[in-house]
Length: 255
Image (cartoon, rainbow, N blue to C red):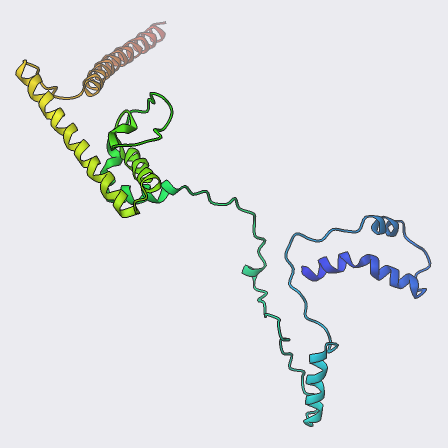
């Protein structure tokens, strides 16, 4: 395939040599077009043919050495010149490499990967997506200064702030951020338990199942009821069809 492509691009030069040797008398119309608009190179990476036929210096030296040694008809052993690197012409080396966009990485990505590797269940906690001001705090005195709900992202931003502003190392900033994070989580759990105890004291009854599950159960019950009604109506219609068919057959026989 590569030889055919190379031969197709060399048509112009080959035909010009024929004209110069008076082997062709007429100039074809396409020759002028190929001179003004030469064919472009192929996008397929082609192997380089190392067919010099003994014209390079190191090949002539190898031939002289082989002839001086008395070897008749010895083949020329081609060696790689100094400064050259042997390249493979395998299929995997001829593939066209596509341009790929550069990978975009932020400093918080490594911190986020480490935090969620150590706290995998933190991803399951619900998050409030509403932002009050829409801006990140410029100065942090503690983890809760981030505003709103304290999540894993708050720990990551706080750790990055300690590394940039306070000059702490990665491990020191991680230890301080997680220490405050654990304190916030313990306080939230204690508040939830106290609220549950107060609600129980004032007579609140815990739900046996969530409201959404209750609504789904009611919906399933109605669907089953409607299915029974639909089956009864189908059976009634079938009986009517059978009765009508019998009456039609009796009327036909009586006539």
